[in-house]
Structures are given as structure tokens and as C-alpha cells.
Image 1 (cartoon, rainbow, N blue to C red):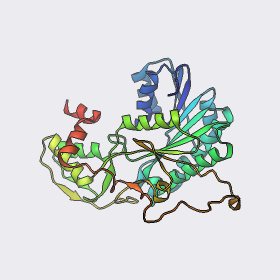
Image 2 (cartoon, rainbow, N blue to C red):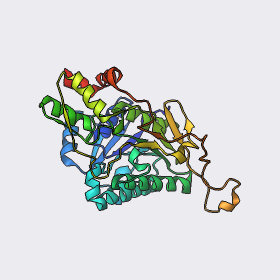
Image 3 (cartoon, rainbow, N blue to C red):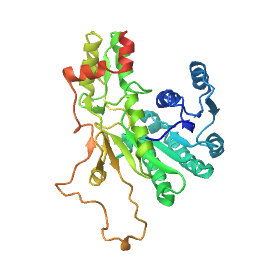
Length: 339
């Protein structure tokens, strides 16, 4: 584990769910400076008042402007790049905005980090980047490719670039659980897109652990995935109703723009070469250059019938009934609502 004492950090999108939790973790580690970079001045003001720590610096800016990032990254050792547009329906209606933030913004962040001499850069990605069918996933898939291209160009000689990929974080902005709780407590019908839809179950602590795993032991260009369980949306709604002791029924509204029935964290092609690290999968970067004739093994890894298959929310550990209820009751945001 890397010693974080006397080190400087910058978190892009630092006022979001991940950023605020990572900030708390870094403050406990005796970090020298933590820069919170975002374009939301209201959230920055709220976080400044809640934190009140002289080690924290708030920088107002946008990842779409590389000069904002160069200023933010100056004298920074490590960057956690969490800034993104992540609402699938919004990105479907405004795909150009997803490109500007998720693609161009990530490119700007990678160049700025390299230019000012950042040592390590960890990008946060999403399951929607695997076999993407929506603008958000496509933009994050391109962002991953940008980071891997930077890693491929320079290896670990300048900035080390790692990627973490995970599903929806429970209780975070835009996740369905807070909406379901709100509807249950108001005795409203739950709005379910598709009863058979599955989603990964991962909390904020696990998202921090994944990023720190990639940060501390990751190799430049590699992708890291947490082995999260999953459940169906209808089982999730029933479990929440049981926890809050509320009778419930639901109406099926159909999948929203760009939604999948299930999400994939590791593709078939990636799983064929992935390293099993216990709680995590490591997907190594393809370090070959464009002169393929120099390599003995040409093409993609074998995808025969015996090769490991993709890791998705349909084939991972499925939680339901009592096990799902027990799992949810352990989550901090559920405990807070029950207290």
C-alpha cells in the first residue's frame, strides 16, 4: 500500500458521491493537500462548510477546459478522475454534452496530468462502457480507450494511468434505491422499468476500495473491476418494502432511453485474458503496437466454448429474499433512513 502522508491529490468531480467519500478517506490518511475540482459552486460551498479543513482546496472549473485542469493539477501527486455526465437518459437526449465532458474532458485531464508531472491517475468508468448501447456508455468506452492510449504511449515513465470500472453505486446520485424508498414512504406505486432487469449491488465504500486497489497496486493501462453481486429490480423493491415495513405494489413503465436488461463489467474478450485477484478482476492492457506481424500470437484471445464468459449482472451472485434484505440493512444510507 502506498504511503499517502505528505502527498497532494486532486479529485475531479470532487463534489459528487464518490468525491465526498474519497475526501473523507484521504483526510484520515494525513494527506498534505486535497484539491476538489468541479463546476458546481453550490456543492463546493456546502462541502467547504461541512469539511472545514485547511488541507482542502476548492477549485471551480470544468474538465472541458484543459487550462482549468493544468491549474488544478499543479503540484499534485495523484489524480482521481471522477468528473462525468452519468445519467443515461440525459446523455441520450444530449449526446454532444456527453462527448464534451466524458470524452474530451478525459482527454484534457490525461494531457494535463502528463504535462504537469502527476505520478498516478485513476479514471472511474462504468459497466455501461462494455458492449455500449447508449451515449453515456459509448462516451465512457472512448474515455477508457483514451486513457489506455496514453498508458501505451508512455508506459510508466511519466504518469501511470489506471482505470476502474463498476456498476451503479447504491445510494449515489441517480441510483434507483433512494427513489424506491421515497415512493414507498409516500405510499406511491413503485415505478419499475422491467421486473427482470438486474443491476450490480456496490456501495460507496467498495467503490473507494476499488479505486485504492488500482491506485496502490495497479499497472498502467490496466482496468480493475470489483466482483459485485446483483439482484433483479423487482426483488430489490420487495426487499426495501420489507425493510421499511410498507406494503407495496408497482407499475411497469418500460426501459428508459438507452437502458439494458443487464449490465456487463467484463466482456467475453476481456475475460479470456483477465487475472483473478480474489475480490477483483484485472484486465491487462494489450501492449502490442500496430506492427502485428512482429507478434507470434495475432488477433484476439481465444473465445472457444471452454473460455471464461463475460461477468455481468445476470450471471454474478444473485441476491434475493432474506439474503438481499440482510445485505441492504448493512448499508449506511439504509441505516440512516431507519434511525
